[in-house]
Image 1 (cartoon, one colour):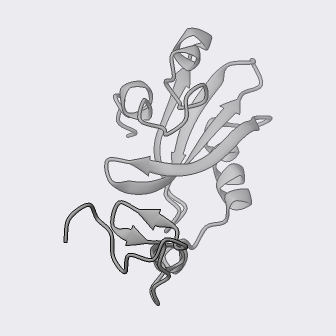
Image 2: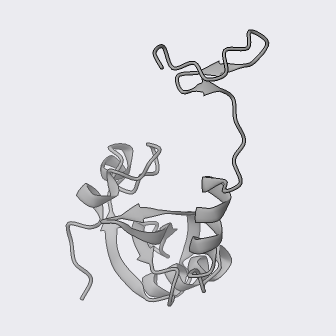
Length: 133
């Protein structure tokens, strides 16, 4: 078998491994189901938890789910009553605040919270460098 063709029919859609196939175990939905069974805290509840962690009159500006150090987490951007921004990491399994730090506008613009960049890879450099007590 060379060239990656399986079946050899000219009317079939070809990929590097042969024709376009449909198997019985779809990876995406299977992984999503496994993760969903572990998530006990909703996005809305994570937002409320992040606001309470920052203090009275704090408001969530943005929240999304992603990974840090191989673990799932809700990443919240919260503004406090003095208009200071805070990055808050909430565990989706138990709702505990794993990390919280005040952030500068410059830090956010450079991806400290993953707000300006997709993928959240920069979260490690910004918020996670300061452990939560």
